[in-house]
Image (cartoon, rainbow, N blue to C red; front, side, top):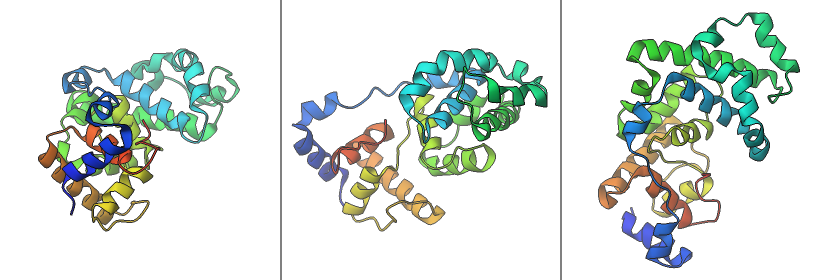
Length: 229
């Protein structure tokens, strides 16, 4: 299995050197910021990434202030009092993307956020206190208990709320395969995901870098699609 230093060296060669690669890496916010987020911001971000999936991101981004207004700033208490008829009325609300399954996802994720918030004294504690070395376990939990949070949507949500998280895009997976890891091109089985997690943990021990940077460097070492963010 390749040491991460070899992956980083490949990325530096592709991107114009060590300094150039470093400038391309995003800032990883301190976990304290995530732990201070209120529940509404998690529901808001879930809704945003779900609406971006399979849709033009620029359209969702442009309409996002209207989404916030339409969904009552994602205030979980206010949303919990909406009647079935009020949820159905979103299908004629031009402020949002009128897609019934994604509207239903807001309602279902509202319940998910509220349930976990009660259990952990805030949804932020649920996300932020999950063991760092078991991101794939958190991804599985989001997919199982949330709505439409599987695939790349779950990790993207985690990144957007400020968690140090890796992505398993095509370029990242290819870097892992080139390093000697035997996983599918589109890893989805728990076996492959756990193997990917183990390699990410190994690379973090070797490099002392955050998962976000490891993921991005791995993507830069093989292709141009980065790690989706």
